[in-house]
Image 1: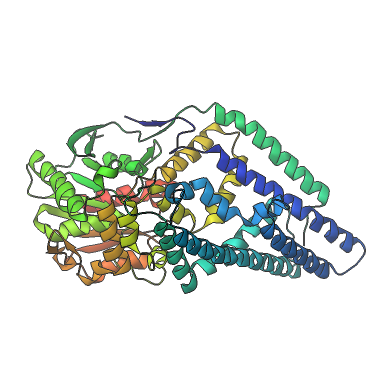
Image 2: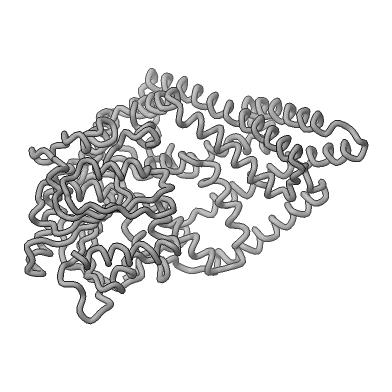
Length: 196
Length: 351
């Protein structure tokens, strides 16, 4: 009496989830390569690698801001910080409760304003995560520990993002914003207009 | 120190891409993903609910049946995910007679189903069916997660029908400081949500759960998947979990309204203020033996939320079982298979 699911059943595995995150990982690698290059150059020349690290992360943060403003101009970087939004899209949240065409214009405007605040919050956690990652790399270097692989760096990036995102998630401000955002999105619907 | 050189990073990326490409072949050849492996028979049906009896694995199972009440969220085959990850199998092997409620998938016609329907009518009818079938005044009841909260309500209202109660990763105090789900729903206008949408879309719940840890649960997990893409069995195990995670039934509107407001937002269960079908639920009326199983690293139902039951139920035979793991690991990890079913069975068989 086993229940069967054939791909790509909506309740089964969506290979796009895998491909999207694989692309994110590859984009991460491309962002890290210059850091590695500069680090090894600096090390070879007996320079201040800590300063090199700081400069690289500053550049990353600047580029991140640009990527947010113009995701198409910086698709690789945009992919790194929009992982949460990609997740939402992948899970079909927007499809699940997206307002219909011609939704209440006032409510839609309120929703967009709140969504903008939400994106600002995500952007800040992404920046904070880069700060934290820089700090963790410095701490490791001070302790004489070496990051052995790109995957280890990626795992550290994930850990830092989880930490800064988690801090935001658990804040009172976020709880309020989350509530207002969902309430605003729902308000775009007409009562009884059940989304498909 | 950053060990890998640019060339080594390039090589790592190339290797990753190659594994991904090769892995596509594994994915294509996997065939259907099966879950819910043990043979079972439907014994009672009401609306979309089906009550299943799992075929016993001993000649003479324990005479008092155990009814498992799963949450309305996600699907109950988590209890019997695959051959070597099945709590139900462990309970059957220990000699118990196991029944499980499958709630089905609510649709628009179910939006007016209330908690009273789920607790008094659906659970109540299943309990009565088993009492009659087994010629017993009372049966054993096991509630899982939200199903545990529903079971507590039923048991408090009908203590004479339940001989022993097992609660698994069950929230009782919804306002412990570390309850992130309560935190997220605190400012949601639940009335607006339900009045507008009717049923709550399962996809929204999915997003909420995954958004608690998005970089791990929706990112890193899939990068790690690439590491095992050459192992068809490991990929199948992964996909079974994926199937379960994304298999989220919509929530019947009225039941969701009361659960979200009374349990999450106003914490009425522990205060003794929940009213089901006009009857107040007082957990002090839960006087039969209680085994409360919780997971020490549960990020959805924090241990303190479960353990609060100790201070408010009326049982003089209250025990706790702590499992070192998370909300999902308590069903599917290897350690859970070895520890949880034998412990529950031993506790039940001694009573």
